[in-house]
Image (cartoon, rainbow, N blue to C red):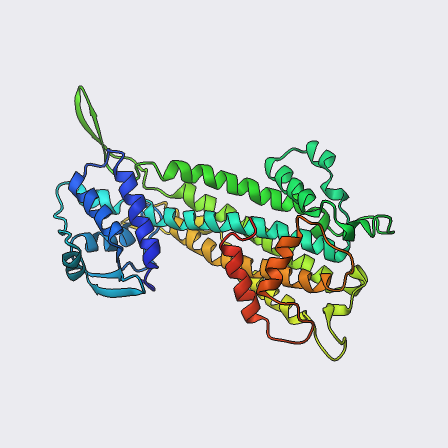
Length: 416
């Protein structure tokens, strides 16, 4: 059911499936794996409806649609170099000189019984979150500069006595970004005692997201190189054993996706709080909402509205999806992971979170235009990049295109 999967996601799913089969315990012909590889290399992606997996017994429905393409049945999307063209699988395989597979014993189960759809989405999520965390640290540093916040919460001594790895990394990077900042030095002796938690506790929050990401990386490193179908074939000097088990169950992927989804919410939530602080004249001493003419213009008020709406979407899909078990298959499959749902919802929320971080970058950029001192030399190139994408404009202008353009720079790792 549902819309078709992105052809690139399908190719990734096929790659993961082939890699799992290469381990050698699935009972599949070498020629079948070669056909998968040939289709990947020819950029032929079977059309796969997105909805259908319960994350246990593997991604049965999506992988079945993938397997139809291998058999020369159904429809496929073919990359022409300019766009994707949809055609009959038999025609696409013939054009590429690929022979459709003919399934032997066990091969059907080997192809469809696995965690490849869940895994490809979780891999994409991991890649995007790596970029998002780096961008959120840049946005944080810019907001600290704009708000004339304190650098003391990032003191190495504070974090050395609570040495969570992610917390240490985030605090270290913020110290680097704020180093030698004339703007920060200009208010070193101000009367402010402590900043709001969204500034002061940011290493503890972003650092926790880093630690969740590290757990996700470890899980994916194992899963990508594992055998996830059923039953499995084990050969020894004593003969051949066919053993039934449950490696197709995606619980660990679903739980990792759910915990990462919560982490993404926290990353976006604390970012939105910093936007609110920057728009509050009592916090910054700058014009309310950073408006050009307060009272007549609204400044960045609506940008914060949009960020709040994006966070609402994240919260509404936060799950946990793994807690939504539905019994199927005549009570045989009485506990399923819903891992595919968890992984897909995570990807959607990463996009929303990226929009919030983009909104914070725009807000900090405009706020910094009110400051006269130079920011840290290590941070300046990032501000220059942001302003090359979104020029400073204090007036009431449309911001949707600016957010989208900045979001793309976040996703491509420009702030790593």
